[in-house]
Image (cartoon, rainbow, N blue to C red; front, side, top):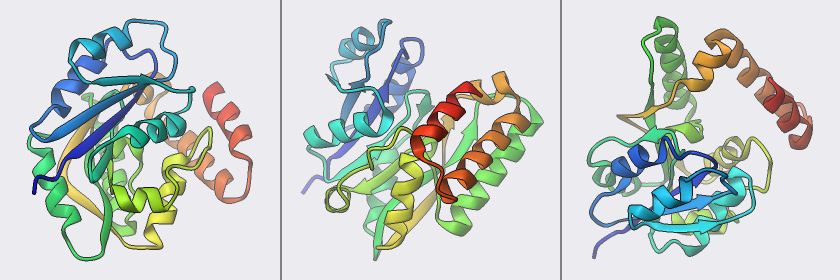
Length: 225
């Protein structure tokens, strides 16, 4: 029996990036679903030109991913950022990972576009954290057994940290694997804000969330920085 993977891509004004992302996602036995959160550019038109399923949902990555999951037909759900590229033959790797005992989810190692040596240190830190603590984030193309995803009620309806909270819930019920193959994500935020500042903002956000600062307040602060 063929195991179909549904790749769900939340988008917002990603007309310049989405075609390359779709090219990496379109494989045999893979269903691609693009969920637009109100783009004002040609994102939807570009996605539609690829013949993939395109729908609209209220703005917010968690809400958009949940909307895509509701119409997905795959037994496996893979959530892909619009500026992240999947490795070749990702489908086989994902199926093999989730066939391992007690495994409920997984993700890929991270590579960041850009030549700065400091980005290599970020990659090492991300991949070390993911491997040791089984705690990947959304830009690593998280994949989840669809049945498990539905049992958990999908991503929490949060304006930020939805992937972090999902990982916390998944770790309580099974294994999360980090695959050695890499996804390649855009380095635009790191290069615009600077590696040190971006990393600091990310870590402060996580600590504040764990200390109980409201996600709404965190989202407002994060988007200003």
